[in-house]
Image (cartoon, rainbow, N blue to C red):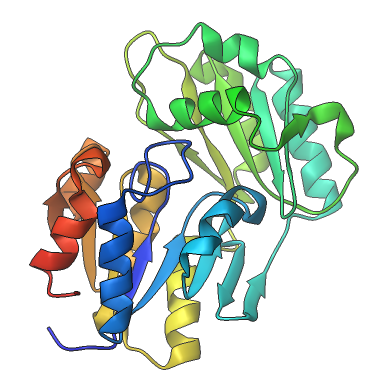
Length: 275
């Protein structure tokens, strides 16, 4: 397939099991082999910098973080777009007024409603985003109580609620500025998703890195598992969805590879000639 490709990897449910920070050895080996062949590998994640930081030890070439709000290539920041203070205040006010549980992501830290752990403990297993937050809370992955939030710039809110009507008023006032990216819901589970600023998405992050490096979109590969990967998958030259991923995303991809727990990334890298 030639050399010099750009590879973009989602983290939760793609590179690692949801909420984990250690990729399978097979994936790390494949990434290193791909880089040795002249390809570059980037994280492309909804996680903020604080939550993806443990993975930086594995030698990635850059990142699209916060679902596109913070983009870095090598040591250079290409894009940095937090919400305005007014937007942050409005988001928190409308979500809390409607009983929507949320976490707020800044670059350096994540702040969660204090009763979120209690709320999640009653939910069904199986939803990768809920599982990610359940583990993050239980393992104290630097999710601080919301009352400690000090007004620093925020990029994204992750939301959870029991019924769609809780989002009616927030949507009415916020949807012009934010995309409500809601995940598939498992039986007896809650609605969960993210409020992502319409000024960016993962796909735009991919384009910014391509333009910076002078690499055509045709030479890019994206790997994801949930609907917050849609813009990345629609942008890259070749899209791959994990078998453990969203049914809807699989329909939009060029390839479905085995799940993260069965060395899916390594197998796909091999199949696509990236290693």
